[in-house]
Structure formats: structure tokens, C-alpha cells
Image (tube, rainbow, N blue to C red; front, side, top):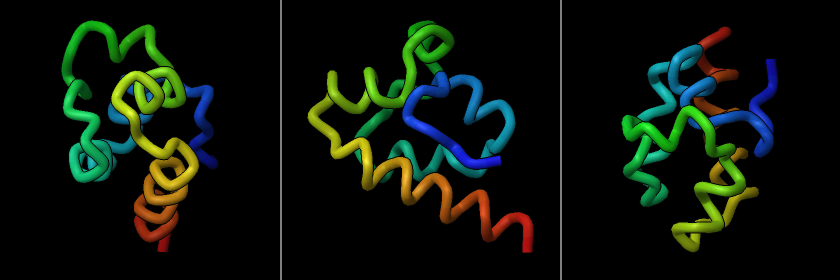
Length: 68
């Protein structure tokens, strides 16, 4: 499965717990807050001034390395 910017933060972290560190490295520290259940990756990244495309690319790198 490919992670997209339309997925909620909680959805990604629940399915792929190892992505939590990627969110943190990019400065999105609210992975555990209640808003993460409703906010998608793009909304969270935009709110924190984070490059969403770079974040999604890094999230997918972590997920793809898990499958190997």
C-alpha cells in the first residue's frame, strides 16, 4: 500500500508504527494527539510548514523497506 497525503496521520501510524519517527524528523510532533485521527497528512504538514511531498516520500521509503 502506498501512503498518500490524503490519509489520516493516525491511519498511517496505526498501520505502520515505524513511520512515527519520520513524522517526528519532519517536525510533525502531533502524531499522538487527538487531531491526528481527523487530520490528513497534507493538512498536518501545511499547518506546521512542512513540505508534504518530501514527508510522503520519506514515509513511503520506510514502508517499502519494511516489505523487503
